[in-house]
Image 1 (cartoon, rainbow, N blue to C red):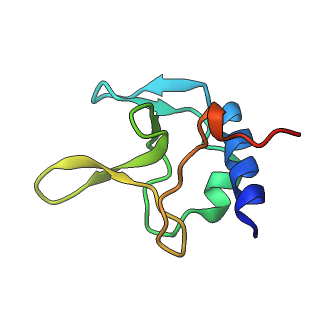
Image 2 (image 1 turned 45 degrees about the horizontal axis):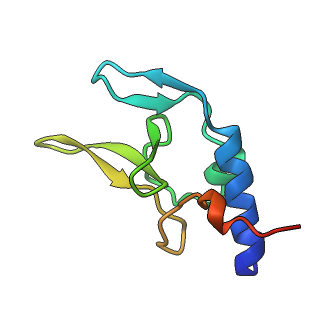
Length: 93
């Protein structure tokens, strides 16, 4: 998949993922993670508690470890972080 196609898909997914729900920990998680994100996410990540952070425009998931619960970057099967394009990066059509 070319970079431009990948970027366009991520932009569309980001626009569809605006609705959130507050978890018991106070974090606002996406109510519905976009299908495209789900399809490229690597297995063994918590896809029930996913956020899109404004600081880096990337998807993060809640990981409950043996000592603490923390947010980790959501990654593709190839190990790349899953991020949304900023409006300035959207290719003109």
